[in-house]
Image (cartoon, rainbow, N blue to C red; front, top):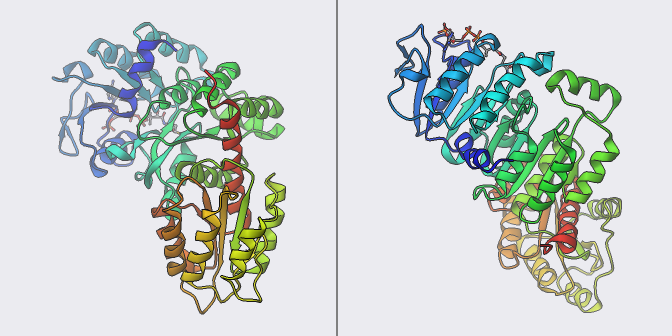
Length: 463
Ligand code: COA
């Protein structure tokens, strides 16, 4: 990517001023919603609505043309019909905007490639990064910027989500709040006429607010470039990919959705492996893994220990550990002896360690401390099955209390229960501990930490 274009991507993600071209007076239109969302969600930069037919929108002075705006404009967000895009883009460039995003649909995804090529040409010649067309917008929780027609900002955190599907982005925002999955930026890339995964991933390498990068991907523009860029960036921060369009029918749907070539599944999987990209099986798995990788350190070895208060959950987690390529091993004899003295005689000091249904906060603390302290142990999956005699929030508090002394070793938690465990889950996630409702998901998250750890061991220090 040209250096000048790369440097200007910051104006897409952190603009200090935005012109909304096609800002509408009608609350039912996207051009109204974009201005409304910027104001409602607390964007602190300057907002310039552009509409030749209006004097004022939502209390803001409206300009007939971007050329009439008195100050500088960092970003032009275009929301006029496709037939008008070239004209307003030309004016934006004349105004000297530093970046352009286009929500408008009706380009290559419906065969209108000529128009799309024309806008790309214009931006490239003027060294301006172009996001879209056919996007839902850009959201940045660190700057309260909802520059989109998504109803609200996602839950704040350190994952940047790049998505080829805008509608998915809209739907998943509610999910991030319900599940406490923290998002830094949500970037809809639509047709990827100029900027695609390759360019944004490269930019995010240095982004201070991003700890993990999550992709919803139908296809990439340039497989080789994607693999090289991702391999470089993966050394610094984890990338997780949800690849869609794996079936024949799905690939056809992708072609008409964003004009993407979904490509050969095996080729993608090979590229992901080469690049250290953690592959996810759908949305749930993608967010689960991104959560773990954004909050926890990579797993540096294969020695994980399961600590549970429920025997069945322990058995299931042993099965999934094997399925996901990190089979449980016998723990060292000295650790087993220590644990034996900390649990009831009817518990099990082996791996999984069964604390039994009698386990309270202090029991979790004592055993987790002994386990995490031991040099043989690389990581822990801690399971709690809700029982009438125990308070899940107390257990969660105990787990977090211990883990804060061993932050270099990853932990994932499984809390099995209904409404009783919701507060504990929120509390754990707010304290940097990924928590899941089933042993399978907690173990899959730990396996993702191992997969990333293995990549770093092999290539982390490569020049
Ligand atoms: N400059 C600025 N504003 C202009 C303009 C110009 N040259 N010409 C017209 N406008 C104004 C219009 O007057 C209108 O404002 P008003 O409602 O106050 O009169 C506003 O811009 C919007 O124009 P309009 O013609 O009403 O378009 P629209 O709102 O019906 O549709 C899009 C515009 C972009 C939303 C539509 O073409 C589109 O592409 N929709 C799909 C978007 C999408 O789904 N994206 C992908 C998401 S995943």
